[in-house]
Image 1 (cartoon, rainbow, N blue to C red):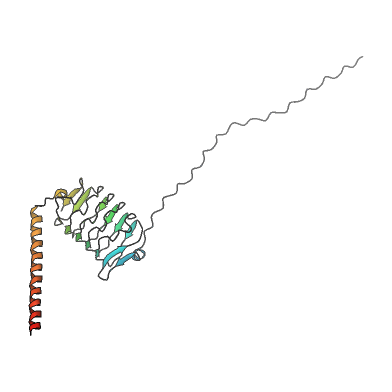
Image 2 (image 1 turned 120 degrees about the vertical axis):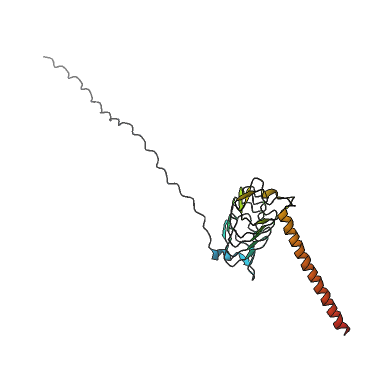
Length: 239
């Protein structure tokens, strides 16, 4: 019998790789947000080297370009123009106990000054002391503060409230206001319209008359002493 040729065997197909179920890609891990660095507050000893203090305790000049200034002890008043070299950088100023006076134009035109801490010993704030400090919004007024001269806070448009002691005298001026429009001013807790103090205010008139009388007395005494000195000199020369 004829032998039949064997049928060719079918090649086994290679097993297809089992497709794994699609994996959900993990969300990228969030890196921790770095906390903003807190501004380093220089010590009083470090700040002292930028201060020019006279023998009588007057702060005459400050050259440290920093935003936070805590003035050292040993100062009794701050002269006008003290911060003119660094007025662009000032943001917070702490004035130490013992300071009794802030003279005219001490902080005038400091565009970034926001906060000022005044000492309990302060009695006087001079003319234009904080003029045009447009960002100033926080300042305390101590109980011993007795006088604020005209224009002191004019142009401080961010200042919304000023709580002054009851007996604080605000030097009036009919041309310019001591506080910005919209600032609520209180004297001893009572709201007053100190932003539009009239020049003929009863207390203002009394104060001006007192000052004029004192100036007249000083001038009269000075003239009398000068005359007496001239007479004595003339007598000595004639003798």
